[in-house]
Image 1 (cartoon, helix red, strand yellow):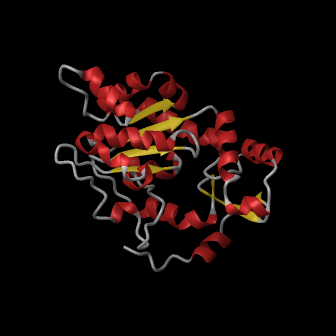
Image 2: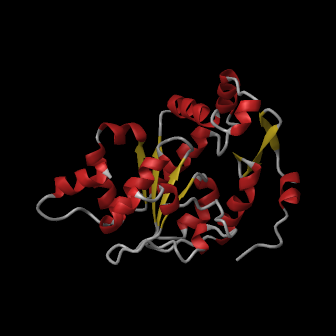
Length: 253
């Protein structure tokens, strides 16, 4: 349902802001920094999103392995339709909670959020939102949360290379030393990095049946072991005679 009462300019005027890149600002909401165009989506998630017990939420800080985890989780949950990843983008199959579709709706209000798999019909969403903003939502639900993190140095460098591809970067280069300074100060989209990571780490320690925490490095070093762990955590373990073969197929997909 569209929130016609939300006034973005009014909301932004009430929030602390910091220079991020050139003339662009980030706005602080709940102790974390956000791009202005995402404030409405983030606010709407905190107010309206009600996870189903069967939902899977992939949470991550930007550039920590999100796309790879989207593909793996989709394949694990929807084994008979994992071929869709060959023709559809992982971001469309596992949409971000705080982003709006072309009709101006968030994904959790879409009727297409449930994948067409009769055996494993579960919604899978992703988010870069910190646990601190989602605590009330997640703590009141039996949904499963998977959080992936990555070495902060590699996260920083990957973010810099990603942003350099933006059209804005052609007109206004972003010096690496400025990127480092902003990242270390926490003034980066969804930052501070450590606060973001610690929130989900604590959740996984306090509620291990509800939240699974892993690192990009662990997954890269031994993907098959961690795919099996993810399947067990999600309640859909691999079964049958050729478990290792099934896991290899997921990793390859």
